[in-house]
Length: 197
Ligand SMILES: Cc1cc2nc3c(=O)[nH]c(=O)nc-3n(C[C@H](O)[C@H](O)[C@H](O)COP(=O)(O)O)c2cc1C
Image (cartoon, rainbow, N blue to C red; front, side, top):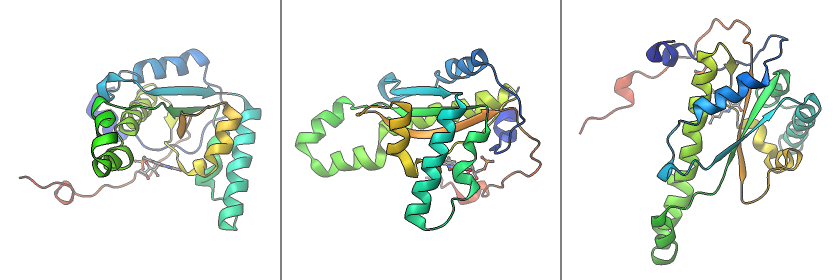
């Protein structure tokens, strides 16, 4: 698929055909996506490929029950549909401390705070991996959706998957053969999102 075509036609897929996707195909998606850029080429990411229905069902139950506890209502589908996919990529961020962050930690607390929690280069690297995963899936005829909503139950899910501190679960990406989705989300006009200086 042409790259520009891929950018223009990718969309979040939230309904999947009842068909399996074999593990080799899923591993290949991650192998290709790992060409993504990261700060100092730290590649501070790790991906669990979850195919176990039992594990996915436990994760969904945690998302639903934590949502109910904190919001007082049943969780909307956008928090819980991931268990309907034949596989889910659970994307983990490993710590990334650049040389300058090490220096700032002791010399300038306010800049250090901004780098760590607002700029967060480690999380930006992991986000670039996720974008690559979405496009690699689309290129391969697979549907996918970037999800952070279910991580309302982040700690509970980390326990189920086996993610250990200091690593952090950052996103779930259900993946499968897409059901047809005709609508496409719109975007702001480019004039609204740029300023030339
Ligand atoms: C950081 C992030 C978190 C998201 N979390 C969810 C989510 O929890 N559930 C969901 O259904 N979609 C989620 N999405 C998908 C967005 O809703 C979707 O990308 C957006 O509406 C644009 O639609 P498109 O991807 O079809 O172009 C998330 C997207 C991003 C980038």
